[in-house]
Image (cartoon, rainbow, N blue to C red; front, side, top):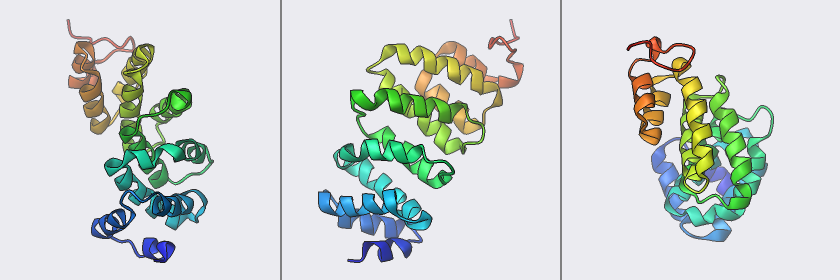
Length: 190
């Protein structure tokens, strides 16, 4: 199979699913896909990221050897939003090794704080950080602080993800009525 040609022909989720089935648990096929993602032109890279995301959801173990390279790719200037969205989506499904958690956490905090990032990238970043915080409880407090700061300026998807992940009574109060939130982060209702 000419994988690049097949990827360039992808126009629907059905075609993605066909390629995900073709990859299966096969490390060699997954490697071909990753090489297109990491080294390919913009269009093949974006479409391969979409396929990799679905592969990672089914077989997260395939992604582990590639995590460092994926994170490095995320640091490239001018990276297309589709690539960022798919990489951060993938990071939700994998157990991030302890040695990469700091790098991933920093990246996700930057993504959450950037109002230029698409909302999906920012909400997936919340989930990735919450997953890391299960192993690093000190990170949870930092996540709560950043989310509280972003809530007054956030979209409904961001607020919904914050509510789902943080399940904190004060956060829920802020989410319920972000317009009534003062600069201190507390509700103006008493």
